Length: 152
Image (cartoon, rainbow, N blue to C red; front, side, top):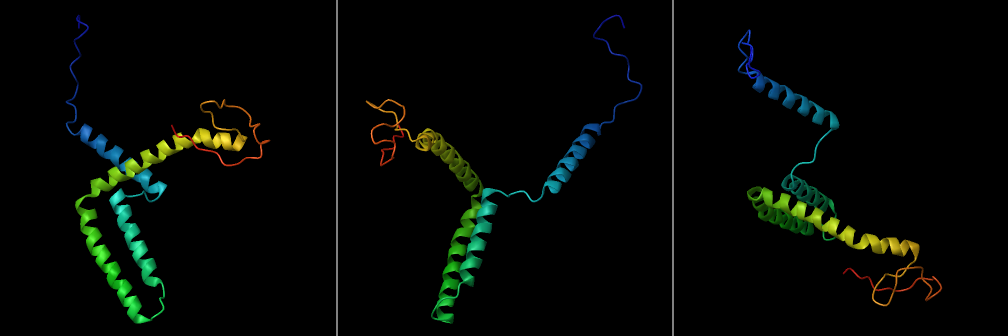
């Protein structure tokens, strides 16, 4: 072993399935950890299906005036709505994941837009703008009042 790149000969051949076994052990440990945490939310499509079922159950349980006729009409409308929605949800589950992500991004954008305004409201300061420096309110004695929200 005069060269630093040489390696000593292995005493035994490495197990060809060692990587597969290690991955299987890691996967089993991760599944056990997730089971211990409790049920995980499903995909957006699965959650939408649960929502449709929950709303249908709730609406079906409402007692309507008019007796069985009105209840029958409600049941029929619910069945038609589910029949129309379920194939769309099942064929396009990724669309709902993207819509959920987009909704999260829109919520984050909204929060960023109004966070400064909310801080000014709690400090009772006017919004800064042209001709209006940021600072304590002195125009109406700090009583508050209507104010234009500038999201630009």
